Image (cartoon, rainbow, N blue to C red; front, side, top):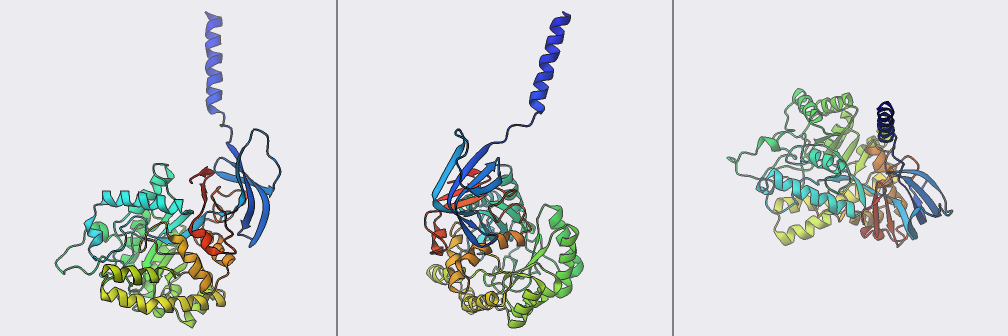
Length: 429
C-alpha cells in the first residue's frame, strides 16, 4: 500500500511539473531574397529571419537552419514589415450617397461588417491599423478585442471608440430632417466646452479606447459643416490632451482648415488628420513641434469618381474638389519641409483592402518609394507608440511581414497586390 501510494504521488508530481514547465517555443525561419530594412532605409539581400512563436529573434545573412526546421521560402521575393494604416474606419458602413446610412444598420450588422473589413485589410498586407472613429461607439473596441482573442482575423488595432465633436459638428451624423433623433450610442463623444470635453474623454478611456480623436474642423463628408471652419477652441483641445496624458496616451485631431490645424497643434495633439488646407505657418509649427501629419492623398479621386457615379450630394462633391488638389500640394510642401508624415488613407470612404493605392500618390506628390514605405512602417509605428512591436523586421518585434515578387522600390504599385502576408509568425495568405 505504502509503495503504491508513493508511486501515485510521484506520478502526480511528475504530471504537475510537466504542466507547469513552459512549452517549447515554436521556431521557424524565413528565407528572404531581399529584405527592406525600414529602420535604416536600406535593402539587405539573402537574409535569414528566425521566428520563435510570434516574435522575431534573429535577422542575419542566410545560412541553412537545422535540417528538420520549418522554412518559409521567400528567396524570390522582396520581404518587408507588415504595413500600417494610421487612418481607417473598420467598424462602420462604407461611405454612400445616403447621409442616413449609419442609421440603417444595427450594431450587430456593423459588427459583422467590421469583421469582414478587418479580414480584407489584413489580407491586403496591413497587419496593424489605427482606427480613428466609428459612429456606433466602441464597436472598434470590441473588434480589436475579438482580433486579439483570435475570434476573427484582422490587423492589430489601436482604436478611438468614438468622435469627440461639437453638437452638429464634423463627427456627427448630419444631413437628416430636424425631427430625426440620432441614438445616444452614436453621440458618445459629443461635448460642449472644456469640462465636458474632459468628461467625454475620460468616459472613452474608461471604456477601453487607446487614444482620442478630436474633430477640430468641419468635414468633407459631413453635411452642413465646412472643412475650413474651426469647431473647437484651444482650451477644449488641451482638456482632451491632458486627459489622454493621464492615461499614458495622446489625442489626434481631424483638421482640414489652416486655423483649426493651428488650434489643434497649440492644444498639444500628437498628429493632424487630413491637413488639407494647412498653411506655411502650420507646416512650420508641425515641423518644429514634432507633430505628425496623416494626409489621405488618394481618396479624393475615389470620391470624385464614385461620388459622381452614385449621386453623392453636390455639397460633398464641392468640398472634395476644394480640398483634393490643395491637400496634395501641401503634402509636397510638408515633405520638402521635413515634417513627420505617417501613412493614413481614410479607408471606409473607399473599400477596405484598397489601402495600398495611396502609395503611388505619395510618391507622385513628393516622396521617394522608400520614404512612402517608411511612412507606413517605422513612422506609423512611432506615431502609434508601438515601435517596440511593429514597423521593422528586427529582433523583439512581432513577426509581421509581407512578401512581393516585384520590387516596390522600383514600382511602388507592387504593394497594391502583395503575394504573401504573415502576422505573428502565421501565414495569412
